[in-house]
Length: 155
Image (cartoon, rainbow, N blue to C red):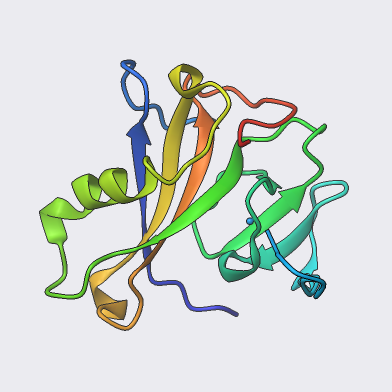
């Protein structure tokens, strides 16, 4: 079992408020990137579970990830989020109350989404217990309306 050390942060890109969503990852040159190996098959049809470190931009996930183990599914299947990018928080003391601001300021400029006015941010951020060793934030694009979507949100 993978031990988790994260906080889930939900932020909004557009003017609309933050939504929780449904209830509760380029290579240059001639070398080809290695294909990640799934941790296990998912109970979601067509889905495979991967650790967040193996996600590639454009990977569609269902359900919204609450741990570092995410279920990647085909994007033509209704899904809750699409992996966009990572952001490494600056070195220093644990950000506590500044986590939301730091996550938003780190993820949003790095996310390349097709329609920013329709996309929000769902992020997995490190907890105090893993600090400072684990400082990576995993940034996901989510529909602002909180509904599942098909197709791609990330360019």
